[in-house]
Length: 360
Image (cartoon, rainbow, N blue to C red; front, side, top):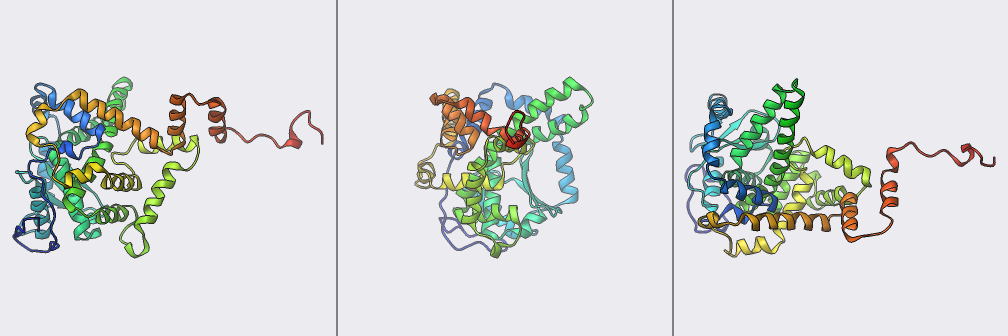
């Protein structure tokens, strides 16, 4: 139950502990700076919502709604009632008045998504429902409700449409290039939006260890007795700081086709935010309200986004990011460092005895 002791209806399986509620909270409170700047700018565009609604005939929203209604199980007081209770509770904590529809669909892969233009739909896979415990699932449902509150479902639906379009126009060279560029940019934004939604999940669950466990299970399966959260976070540290410039390039190439950041990275980012002053201020009741969204400054949001990226680059232990920082700081011998960083892409040098002109 939530902080006011509100009783849930249906099959009561929720932990008996108090959690804070955030009346009127704006999604700006938990959004990653890059996510927030994009959303504030889009919300300021006159007629933006009208244009997207006009596109609804082209986008697959109606098809998705019919598909889930006909071939999935709709969560309610009579079906998956414990998930229904969690959904109501998540909407109550984040003060989302209209509760989204939620479905469970047969898929052994653990996954969840929030799609839709006019009304968001949350979809959980059976693989995820079977994998997570109550507290871990609470964080996931909070994550998806966070997507709905931020309006991410609109852009996720557009991304699904454009991804499908990219396949259809693959035979048109210039058309494919244009769509691919848009999809790549949307994916970069969406990866940041996932970090935002992870924060929303933490605000709902208010149990950072449960959020960590959920991400760890998505990565390694239901073998919690064989895994360790601290060791999992150490993997994120090793991933970020290990290797050389070759590895930095490979990391970029690996993440480009993905809509989500890697799970170890998400866990590390969430832990960092949970320990931040921003999180504590929200928990203390100090956060932007939804009624103030219309007055949010686009330029301020972009400055915060730029500052966020600059801070990430400055604090990053990735070899490429450290090189960028050194470039900005005017460090010497950068040419030599670049050559050494990429030496592995070239053939190994000949042995001293094999080089021409050397003594035997």
